[in-house]
Length: 344
Image (cartoon, rainbow, N blue to C red; front, side):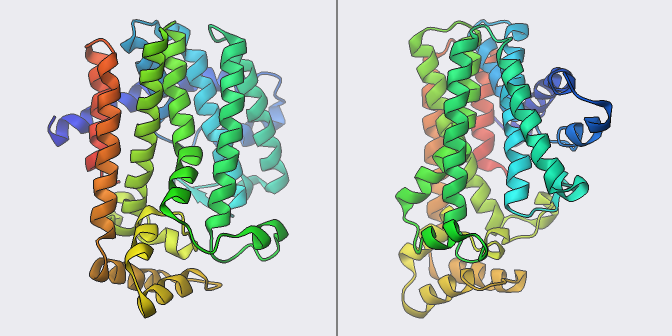
């Protein structure tokens, strides 16, 4: 597929994913007081691509399933994603998301925590409307626990900050290996994408081989997506991404594949400079730019990360061979191929 065709596939994904918005609002508005409505709906009304619910719907349709039967599962998946973002923004003290004030910044931390609790129980209500509530509930409960572990690891990979958090200070990682990184992104990013695809297969009452194929696809897609995200964080074009380059360095993160690979290659003072920068109490974007230039000049970390991303894209595509050939399988293939070339 040409780039323009891949972008069209992504646009179609977004369009399909947004069809879940009215159903999400239905679950969120259930047993909700009028005075609490604005804070609760703020999170889902600030935008978002809705790729995860689209994966549930398209995975189901790729196996001959009905969209209406996949919709509650799709809603549960996206509500889980939004639930995690509300909490992430509190944890990371993020004041903006998609150019809008985050829930905690606009309404306060106490209110944001209550919003998160409301989302969690709205997820439970959505799961009751799936084709097999006990199975869907068990899988999503496991997934949320895995997401939590991934977030815990990501926090512990930070090299500075959170000095008032005893657990983090005591357990912070001094170095992050490649295996550590892969474990973290498998949990924090890939787990929910994997579940989104599995939910689609289950909604279509697929056989074990098809469920396993979509599970592997979702896992590989999630890994490739996060590696691509890490590359864009350090080497993206700000006019395309809408974000400052080097955010992960400013946030002291060792949990970026490019940084992890660069540390394997750098030696002596260069390695010390990278680690010392990440461990400063405050890192400026100018200092982040210096580190990015160092990585460019002294390592092949960017190229190695790109090759790794492409390997996982290939794994995702290979997994889809177990599915029948149809337009929806082609859409799943197109999304994977887009991840290999995306710039934002």
